[in-house]
Length: 535
Image (tube, rainbow, N blue to C red; front, side, top):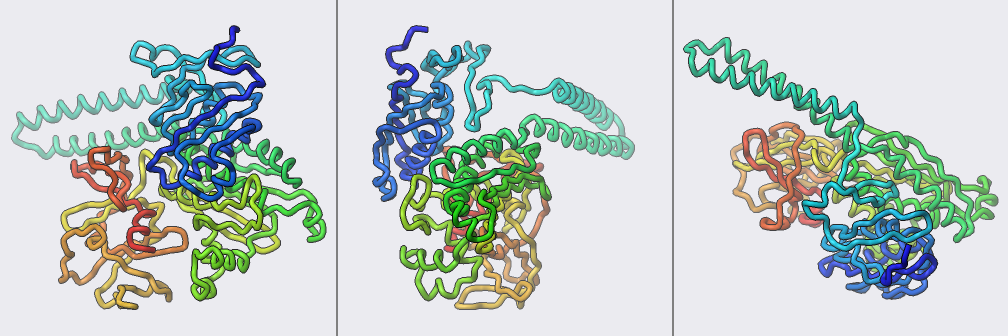
């Protein structure tokens, strides 16, 4: 194949240029993520900004690098385009990603030869042509087609047929109702049909969801090689054990969890697992173990990253936070072990004394928690000094349909994701006390801060004559707060609708949904709600 004048031959350096979103709140972290991806793909011969500039967390508008790699052009392109917060990426002057979308059609060439690249989005007349590429976690996929089994397709067709039958039945009943004076019998039939229609719709939802599901093993199988390569560089011996690879997740959730898992696994190798000599002295096997587990649990996906390393030094973490000025010494001394461990997620904090290729820059775990909480997930850390650390991530099954608790404030209805709720309370007005002029209540012997939902969003004041008020206990990290609402409507699966550019971002609100009666309900962003109330 003739060599394209703008594409380097295998073995030559690829010139990478990325323009980072000027509105990104963590542009240095985006540059760091780009650097990490390029290191996985090959050797970086030149990079701007430098590693020192990235460590300083200065604002980064543009990232460039020269990469020597044996990977194909399409694999390099696919790996780079999974970074969020990047406006444009080009390789050797060819734009591969712009405004959140890939802009290349890549034709697969013979092994060892770089593919031809065609610039431009596919127009309506090009939809029949399959574009071959690799997705962010290494699977070969088509951008314009969806693979599904014949069994799923047959089930969908059967269910659609059931829906059409029920639609015709409803039309017949409507005609009978309009022509008859006695309505009781037809109303009964009408209700029966609605019940059946609801059952068929539920089955249809399950089938569509099953099409979106992929085994998480496709993602897990990437990490043993990454750990092996990292161990060679840091001089450690680590065995990776995988459990629950058959656990299925929504495709969008798999893509979301990819970056956090990279950070956590690298953290375990670099921070957690000791050098072979240290492990032998401690009476441990020379080879450390990192266990990656996935399972379904109460309507959620739980992913666990666990190592048998040195664990978290709580005192060292506490002292580092004070040295960095992230927390006052008096406040740090009063923190429990669990709250000190939570300090790991603060931006700019690292217990590594000297920065390495993988750690010490303070741009890791804060991004992990932010990405997880952005999708209404939660992360919990347990650690035992000398025995290891366990990160447990809890995620919703999908981003498209969210189980939520509907609550009412005056005439407005809001949806709070169930994954962020621990419980609900019915409080008498006498149950609400004040500490430091702030409302609180006692919950099983612990003080629970109380916040009025109507005050947060500046809604009209609640009815002061109510004998009871309801509190929804929401949780973010180790923090809990009781959210006062007028009434609880009930639990419902809601379809997530983005607010759109016209409405823009609303602090404390992530999206919206349309209820069965046609009313619009706003979906609460619990993570940003805690920021809004200063917790």
